[in-house]
Length: 341
Ligand code: UD1
Image 1 (cartoon, rainbow, N blue to C red):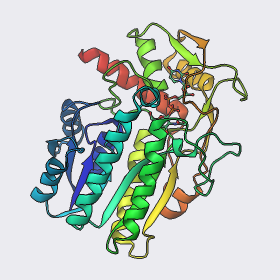
Image 2: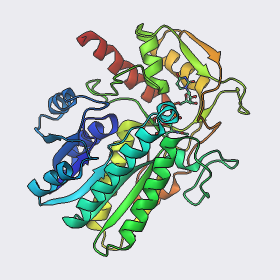
Image 3: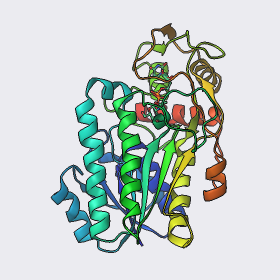
């Protein structure tokens, strides 16, 4: 059984490929254009799993190139569509880049899904679709607020596109997974996030500061209405996220009664402030981090964390790792990455 993974060389895509190769007999076809990743990721996957994967270097905003993958692999039974730009601040600066890339690639994937009658799709969505909320934790029924960034809009619109599309295609099914904040690395320390430029996300920024690649971490805002004034997020281990994708696809493949399109939160249900995340890192790495409290960042919401009951109920998914294990694996990976350079 072939599974197409778009964004396969990326952070969540690569961990999901590892999870698939280690736990299923599915064959993986990966697609990426290395806009925020590199082909080297596949060597790391092969080293961890001992298995080879087939991959294409393709920009999914190009329909004819996208279609080539489907034409050459007519027996694909599921698509996991990760490929997207994902930086909140960059999307605020370059909205057209985000709308163009994230929406056109999704539309092209759906066109091919319909044309080649691929029954199952998993779409990477994000908790950012909820916008700023008064009531926490968020359930999937929480009405969506105005997104805080163009990135978040692409995910909100993306879910709607998937929904409208699945409705009119009787043989197709989808699950949209709303990730909270995926962090951490594979337990081997051999695969993790590789920010191409200066990282935007908190955890790679922390580990790069600790190793000395970056001088100092700025905590974006210390005056939010939270316990310690810093933003609260639901950090979730990337390997837990990867496992959820496998479970979701297994459900779609095996459970004929599974709904046409489900939208499911993937978070631990635990809110962690930026300062608490820093302190967890300091504890597991046994060193002090150089940081200061600076201004707020555009596009940030104050606090968000998940109610994950639906993921438990529908997918049988329970996250295994806590913030210490997330920081520990991220730190191991950063140290290994540094050794090789
Ligand atoms: C956002 C989205 C998330 C998406 C992710 C993709 C929201 C609520 N979440 O995560 O769904 O998957 O982008 O990239 O929009 N921070 C600092 N200093 C730094 C970097 C970050 O203080 O140098 C703080 C941020 O202000 C934030 C927290 O750390 O409070 C996490 O930030 P980040 O890792 O960038 O992720 P989000 O923006 O929460």
